[in-house]
Length: 82
Image 1 (cartoon, rainbow, N blue to C red):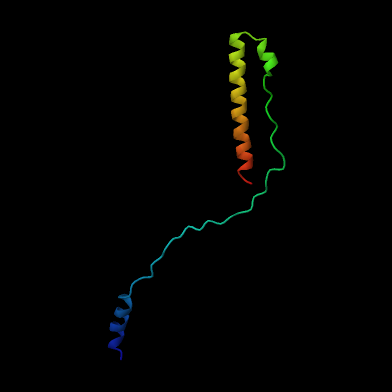
Image 2 (tube, rainbow, N blue to C red):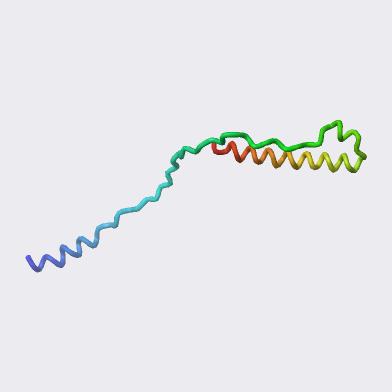
């Protein structure tokens, strides 16, 4: 019996190790929605832009565009969690 012990122990080492599989599981996490919308930007009105010269009008249009882009990014970020 004692002579079989080393053979039995070696037989135990011959078994394969268990295969570990890593899985990614996506879990939905509830997020509180935004209570109120961000305030819209103040834009140059058309009536004020009519009285401007060419340079001022182009500058005002560019300013309006940048403000609207920033506002849309703000809205998108605020609504992303809903």
